Image (cartoon, rainbow, N blue to C red; front, top):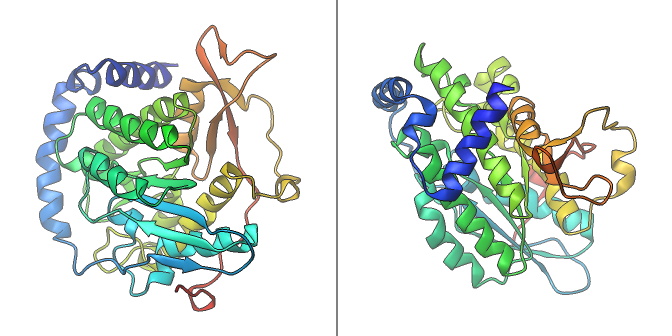
Length: 331
């Protein structure tokens, strides 16, 4: 599979600190960068700031679960009006409902962040002694001339630091940027190729650290293409409140499962199907095309690795709707 091989090479080059433009093709990189400048002029600069969502969500006995969110404007919820509509607010409320415990949310994500800024965000959230972290980053790398290998390498460094601190980590991989309305052909197709390849490489590298990923193709994918005016915000780039809720529904099961609060019965009617345990590179490419798919490390007959590398399990959890914004509260 050529795409799996390319994603594997990209992840390997990132681990070794190698180049990157050659892996994607010099002409493709040059065209994408040039077209991206035009697209940024069309989209314009984001308006306003994301709501501050930090606080305590839910009630119950025991110490609060420390939940942190790192990344870019999508991670912090740029484009909505209230904290309860942001991904962090939605997911903190969902985790509180599933666990029966309060959840303390700390958001370090900021608009415009690239993966090079992740290290500073990790410094910030480690002060909160996090139990579980959500990372969504990479889209700005596509339009800011960051080599894919550098992007993946910096992501892995951040995830590894969180894991070494005892924090479970879920990475929402780079969404499919080929559905953003202001992007015209050929940029739209190029952005799709680039973002899917980056998402696959992110998956390979992140799963190797012991974390798990969720494909966010749905964040800017088929559902958004079918209803852009409902699921995109006014700038036609960032999600609307409904769009963030759609993404939260995909992310909540993996976050809850990572800390042991996802009920197995929720997955009873979600068959894994044949071929769902695959070498990580194959699993990563498949997940990049299928929104809401979780990828995590697994073993086969007691072995974590096979002849083609790390074994990985693709899984689509049962869906539990996240509470509507007017049903949530933060303190």
